[in-house]
Image 1: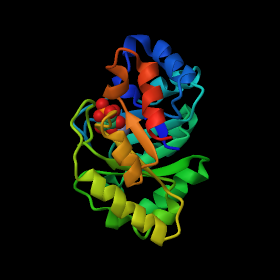
Image 2 (image 1 turned 90 degrees about the vertical axis):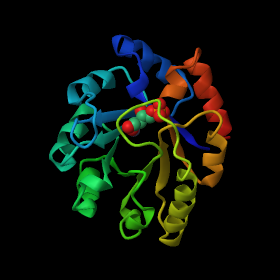
Image 3 (image 1 turned 180 degrees about the horizontal axis):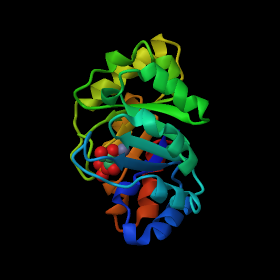
Image 4 (image 1 turned 45 degrees about the horizontal axis):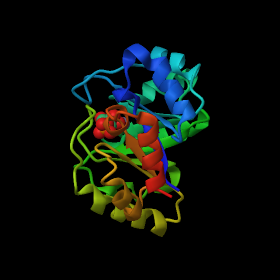
Length: 217
Ligand code: DX5
Ligand code: ZN
């Protein structure tokens, strides 16, 4: 069954507690939390203090997606703030294998995110060390963008690499996931679906999460 990770980027920041409790009570599996630095991506979001505050109310794992340069300087700080899964971009990581080890040594699951232009073949020699590969299906930086269709092929290619290497890595899709494309994504091989706009712009977010979840059953 596929996992659903609502993206806090699209939550109401004046009512974060309310939105966290909505996710707690819903069928969602993880909180997806986007950290942006205004350098790796053309947007700035929030950092450790906000994540630590959210952690006091949240009852599901924190999937923290770092869209920041030199992420390795902050692994420990994000572990302390409450990250359960910590994801770095392959495009920011000269020593990706070392970063995976460092994240896991801090007790977190280790993730790698891949921009739309980056081939998944780059992951072949490290995939056995990676808990989650986050395939970006939009250019990172903003919620509510249009899904990039080439992602379908990337999922299938990545699945093949994971199988060939005997890894148990999860494939996560981030950006433009909707009720219309989720079933195809799951049949391509996606294990985790991030959804920001689809959940939070809907009239009934709890019901939308339920419908996303039932697509994966
Ligand atoms: C984009 C972020 C995504 C974003 C997805 O840079 O990494 O997690 O919140 O939002 P939607 O689902 O609205 O495309
Ligand atoms: Zn994200």
